[in-house]
Length: 437
Image (tube, rainbow, N blue to C red; front, side, top):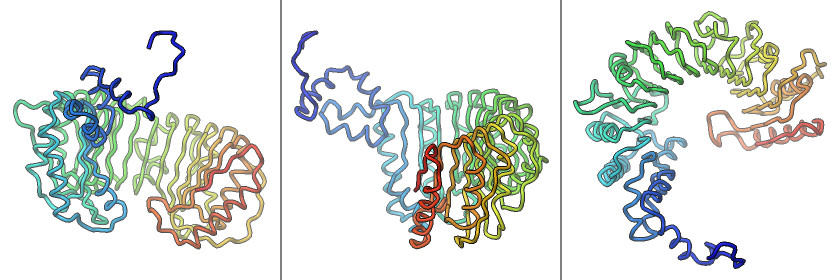
């Protein structure tokens, strides 16, 4: 078609061959670059488009993500405590087959995610790791959640060292879930990863002490979750931006962290943080995002949190007399923009709620999100209190689903929650939008 022609170009839904011809005119390098943005299975499916495309996906340099949706379905629904051996063998065979075919020299990411019942397939997993290192991987993720409820350890142990000729120099993100790794091995890994920016370790019963022999100047994100044998974290990460810790009390030394703005705490350490008796508490004034999982037993008085923009509280409220104590953090956060409250164990009995006059106006709060809403006395009381005080509120999100659990709420309880949420909606001024889930 000549430039300036008034004739209309052909549409793809009218002539598929026209579109294919145009795509096929592109050089292989361009097509491979496009395929690198697709998920692994999507890129492989393009092989049916033409004989020429049949091999191009093998040269993609994006992420090789072996996260099988059918296995994830089993994981989320917990239909099976263990994964049938035939499915596990099929998964391992799938990964091995793809790795044999892959021909690119580098990859950005490599992820394997499947339930591991026992320390089997160790040789396969070792080879997968070496494959990713040979491809100069930047983001490496291993997730072997065995599905067994309450399990606090993995069934695969990370090797103590990598063979000669392999390098960790290109690694920037490392995620280990249900992988057994000792402090000595993790120290070895960190000492050989000069560009590590993000580290995630979850459910490793072998990790007792996390200590780095040298400053981690590039590290920005650190997450240590459910490693219940852990006693101490001692690292120097001056550029740390976010820190997430779920577990028991530990000795914590992060050095000077002037850029820390995002903190998430669970378990006993969350109480130490709230009582301002842990090292992270000294950085309260600079934090912009806080996530805390706590029991509703009253909140200590906080200093003014002038930098805080987002606050999430995950509260267990089985025996709570009120949720209004949660608002103490709102009062200490004059520039808070979003408040999320995830409620576990709420009673849906609706008693008399006295209308509260505005006592502490929240000038900047724009979004209120209530997850686990039942429309009972406690959550309705809190919602009305925030409504009366949040003079700039724009959106209320009411989520009637249970936090962390899918489709387990009794239908009648859910219906009552939806009905009460809609009743609350009728009392809102026009400026406030309500979203009900």
